[in-house]
Image (cartoon, rainbow, N blue to C red):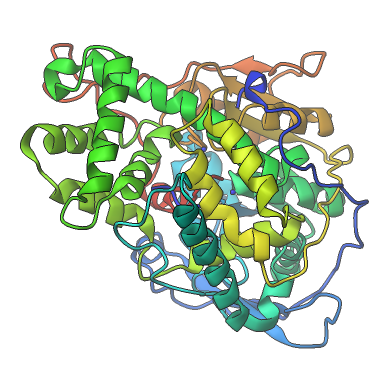
Length: 530
């Protein structure tokens, strides 16, 4: 899933008949390239240094159809297992999502698994092709996400033209990346994972994927089922909706979650003073949106930036209190600095690598509609029921309309030959709606699904939920999965989601929220939608 998280639908929210559904293709031939072994050396990243990690590179073909041709370099990291040899369980590749998310620092993730279950694995972080420390790294327009952009809603011909021109301009600027754009599909990334396996001399890999990383896991399990051992997939992509429909589905899911957030703010009106009901808070949100459209805060935070800085509240609870205080400070005291700080932390100004790679993968995994009339009809239809994020999401993806590389067709995912998999989904996940986890469970008959009813957090595992994290640990220790139940329309077991935070100053006793490891939070922050 790299979309900005300005840094995660229940089945009932699926929008049947909207947009175009990609035609899935039979599994293509799976490349089996063997690079030179990794020459491990010191790492530069502080989290990796602190964890005693090693770093290196893996050289792979730019185009797997031409394995002897031009090569590119993948940055990899490793935190080695600490158990006796007879207890060793192999290598564990980790991907944080995006597409376009850097996973190099995630070699440290094993230390966060309860019961010492991570100690038996070599944890392998990597930056996918074109991302971060891998070379070449893609970039199109580093300043694309600026301040005080015109309203996302194309309510006038002038606004519509502005956004169409801006989106097409970004796509055109991406031509400078040359042949890389033709070779950054999910299938290329999956082939790279197999090449890393070969470079490590591993017969099989274990895999822990978050968000878009779950799509990598599903495609890898289809193309290389005999090379996959244990796999954890958290925040599961729906393979039936790659990718145009997936974004429309997200809009409805995020609308639900922002309403949950407004209700939470109202519950603590004595702290924030923004209304005693979710409806009152929502009205205040849109009042300020119109105010900022007319006169942006510090000349920077207009209506678009206001929407963007609230988006992370739709992904989960970690930033709820921070955003609500910024909201309150602006309304009651005219404090603009917290708004700018929140936007700057999420927008990626000055570095569009993740965005370029997000588009490069999603725009070419499957053909998007090329006619504006299709986008216009579909997004206005969704906007009527989900105004919070629909047009922001549409314009984020609009460069796919004119993307300068040929699109392929998605792999028909078939996990029937995968030995086992543990699927995880909060049932109100906004970025990767719950229907995706149910679909993956159906396609992976040896998988079990843990769901968290009512939970709105995207990819929240290893975040302190003992019910969930202990089952992950048991699976990594022994291969034990929750017992699979008959049928396709439910999970195999459930955990309660973590409780909503209680803000400082509330009358009820404050609870310190559990949090994922900082390096994982930062990696997941890079996700825009997946």
